[in-house]
Image 1 (cartoon, rainbow, N blue to C red):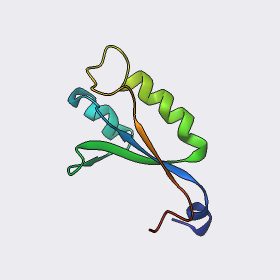
Image 2: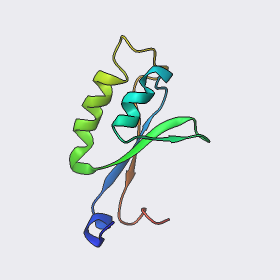
Image 3: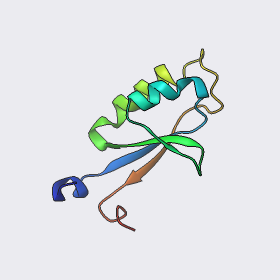
Image 4: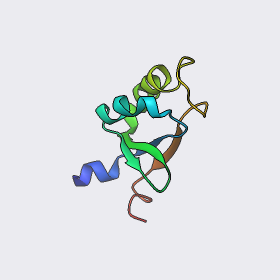
Length: 84
């Protein structure tokens, strides 16, 4: 991670409530499994947030999936909170 990257805001996107059947799609999209929280997550730069939310809406949270949540959880990561 470069110094410029650490200063840019980003988002941790937690695919909360994603059904087990979506795990391969999430893995291919570079999501990581958190066994403690029992969810898939990924950090994306602020500029990619909207595109990632659209991808999740059509691939994980679409009506034909068996998700248990209406959408992902988003946690903002700023330069001041990154290393807390």
